[in-house]
Image (cartoon, rainbow over all chains, first blue to last red; front, top):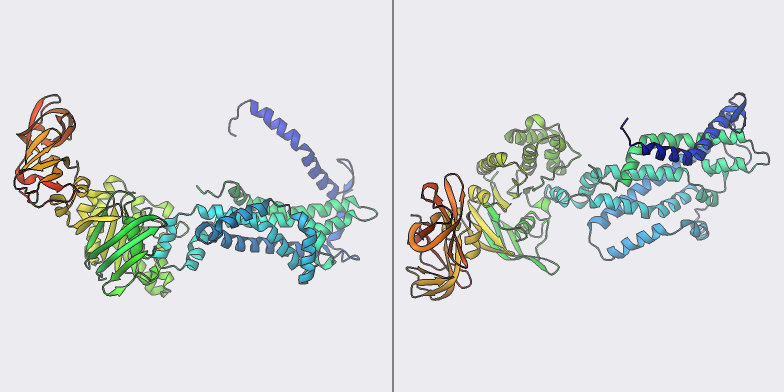
Amino acid sequence: MPLLPRWWRLVLAALILITLPILVGYVWLVLAALFERVHGLVPAGSLSLKNWRFLWMGAVEERPSIWVALKNSLVFAGSVASLKVIVASMAAYAISRLLFPGRGVLLGLILVLHAFPAISLIIAIYYILRTLGLFDTLLGVIMVKVALELPLGVWLMKGFFDNLSWEMEMAALADGASRWQLFWRVALPMVRPGLLALGTFAFISSWSEFILPFTLIVSGQNWTLAIFLQSFREEAFVDYGMLAAVGLFYTLPILLLFMVGQRFLLNIYGGGLKA
Amino acid sequence: MRGVGLGLHNLSKHFGRVVALRELTLGIRAGELVSFLGPSGCGKTTTLLLIAGIYRPTTGEIHFDDRRMDALHPRDRDVGMVFQSYALYPHLTLYENVAFPLRLKRMGREDLDRRVRQVAEMLGIGQILERHPGQVSGGQQQRAALARALVKEPKVLLLDEPLSNLDAQIRLQARAEIRRLQQGLGVTSVMVTHDQAEALAMSDRVAVFSMGEVQQFAPPEELYYRPANTFVAEFVGYPSMNLIGGEFVDGRFHGDGVEIVAPGCGYAGKGWLGIRPEHVRIGDEVPGRALVVESQGREALLTVEVSASLMFKALLPVEAAPRAGEQVGLGWEDHRLHFFDRSGVRLPGYGGGRS
């Protein structure tokens, strides 16, 4: 333990106090998911797996089995993460390294786009997807999500590429690399921390994405976990035990990913500078 | 590995409105090591990158023997290059760094392995090939960079300040080693440096750059004994040559409160007179007062006040040096004097000979 100044304890106490409501929320989630009933934060009844019966439940009316929703969520988040990393790194490399007409304008536009509240576009997006025949498909939501998140990704990756030394690229050229080989074999491996951070970030953000799938997907077969969870809240008699269990189930993968990926995530806020 | 002759014809490079290099014409012989020497921003690195094909010339031509190269991609030029920062790829082992140019050529596994090990042995890094660049010393990184440049057996080797990131001690050793290697392989080499000692010690010929132009292209001794103009005279040699502005009249030079006999100089008019500190002796040509005496061990560097506006530097044996504040008379052998006209161009006459 590093020795902290005394007043730090006060700061810590204050921080804990502020965080408490969220902590309590998570404690409730875990308790409610594991026990038959809870009164507030006090478990009533015994430990039970009853709340977890959704795991072996098949489709009920509109609602698919959770495994279908899980698969959809994985496909959704995975595709968004990979697409975003691929497109953002290529765009960012071009913006960082190549001189082309309109580069400055493009940079400005990307920033503006990032600041733009995406949700205000939702109706326009609905019509676009319908016209393209992509409404109510996973592919459609994936493309919308990637498009909306791309500006931030490009901007972040540009920072990473900006930090690469020109000499390194010149060396690759002198070694006989083409521009493409240079990109794939030298530039990309060197911004690997950035790629991992961006990918993790995109995955987490897509995993918790609710409004886009909720608006743009109707058929149960295409539901993601977020819609699946929401559907329990809309029932006449809300089974809070099961709702909590589904919520916990929904949280676990992301907790896991965060534990693995937090090293990369920290990198993104470090501005991409690697010691 | 036989080098090629390297020809640069009217080579210019502009970056927007900035002229980095102006109408450079230079012929480098096969197997020669030529240094580009000059202060930073003088166009020497630009020239190197033009030869490598990383920059495209604004105008002019580059020839390797009879082949015109200036429109070709670097990969089709057969050049190897060592960068100041070494620019090793941090995500690859030294082995993969050295192998990189061969992998790009899609060389077969066995040939590649043989070539990489051979060049690594030659440079003494055979034992550390599995390490990453971050795990080896600066000197080893420099060798790895050299190995990467040499592994494809280039016709031309380009070195951009290859020694400037090394400790002083290793630098002397690396200097000799690069030269030995270069002569052994017979590869035509161009080295950029701002360190004149390095340039003079290693090169067959040196091109002195200033303001995007070559001031003089000559063997080291000639730069020293017959500098083509006042820039080269002042830039080459340490401490710098004493240069006095003034006027030549009837074989005498008048400037800054001194009058010096300029024997054999037929030129009349404004100009410059130069004498190297190491060629100044105790004598009776110019009287003055020793202002500062810096001991450098074997020799002492004197700053002598000759007149209110003229300081003279003189390098004297310690026994002969006066103490600070003492009166001292300076002199020299006539053939040590250099004469330059008003625009700084060398005048024929004295200053050429070794004694």
